[in-house]
Length: 67
Image (cartoon, rainbow, N blue to C red; front, side, top):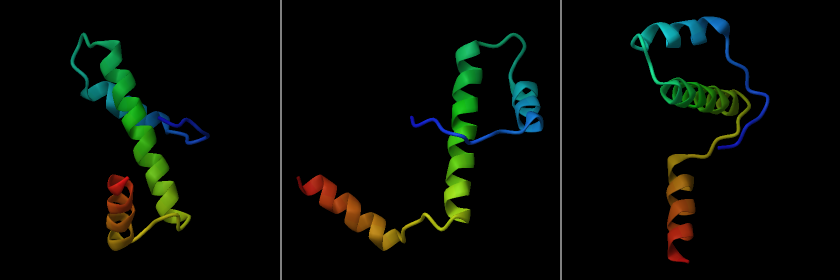
C-alpha cells in the first residue's frame, strides 16, 4: 500500500479506538488505520478530479487481463 502525506484527524482515530474491543489486537488497529488512510486518499483523489468513469475502469481491467 502506498504511503504519503494523507493525514487523519485525531477524532477519527479516537472513534476507531472506541469501536475496538477491550483488549484488542494491535494488528487490528493498524489494519483499520491503513483502511482509513486509503479511504481518505481516495476522497482526496475525487476532490482533485483524479478519477475515471466506470466504462474507463472496465476497459483498463479488460486490457490488463488480456495480457
